Amino acid sequence: MNGQLGVIYMLHFDRPYRHARHYVGWTDDLLHRFDRHAKGHGARLVAVIWQAGIGFTVVRICEGTRHTERAIKNAGGAVRYCPACTSHPRNGRWTALTGEFTPRTYLNLAGRR
Ligand SMILES: [Zn+2]
Image (cartoon, rainbow, N blue to C red; front, side, top):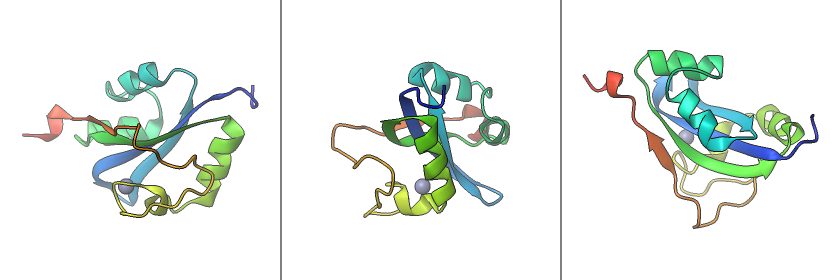
């Protein structure tokens, strides 16, 4: 299954949770995955930030396998690749950003009290 093509995505949190400000994941069903994240399911870190009232924005996506996801995670320093954090994000293992991608924000209403 490691060679299966899917989508790698980067979530930029509305505000940092401890030292975490980003999450990189892989899915073969993008919209379903974000729906689950936005209901507090899915990856542990994302469930935790959602419970803390923190929303997130999908800032980057690219096609790839879990191998690519692993390489991106191992490269670390998500800030350098995040278009929400830096005006000239690097690409690294990510596919270059194009104007066709619109970042999508998932507001966490519990955090807006
Ligand atoms: Zn960021």
